[in-house]
Length: 156
Image (cartoon, rainbow, N blue to C red; front, side):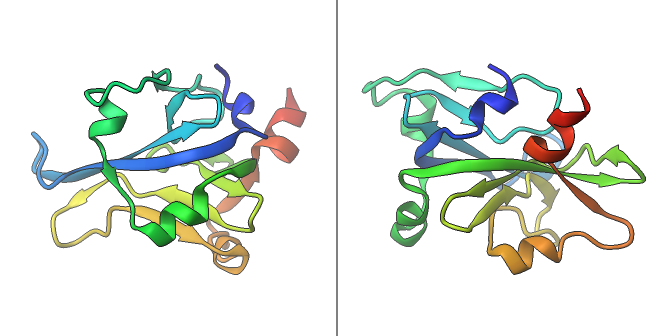
């Protein structure tokens, strides 16, 4: 499954796994997104990668998705049945920032990404939910945000 296949898909649910301290002494966070077609995927890291498919739909309560933690009700309602309009990536000096997750643009005007790793107590690792203004503020003199749909796919 290509990353571009996520565009126009609808989100059914989002869950997450959090580890206070991994084998490197760092906090670790990873969202899992169940799409309306039943597939569970991770947030992409690079525009040219294939999608990390965690699993296909299963009612089995022992699947990694079913074992993952739920977000609060407000967040769950914010994502449920929302369509992915575009996927954005961070670039610095025309090179993709490798340690950052993609930013999903949803049809409700929200943008979501995640911070995956960081030292305990020093780094905020979690799902990041932004409005359009906050999203636009990510770009500055050193950081450019490129759209998969408008910028990256058109170069191919």
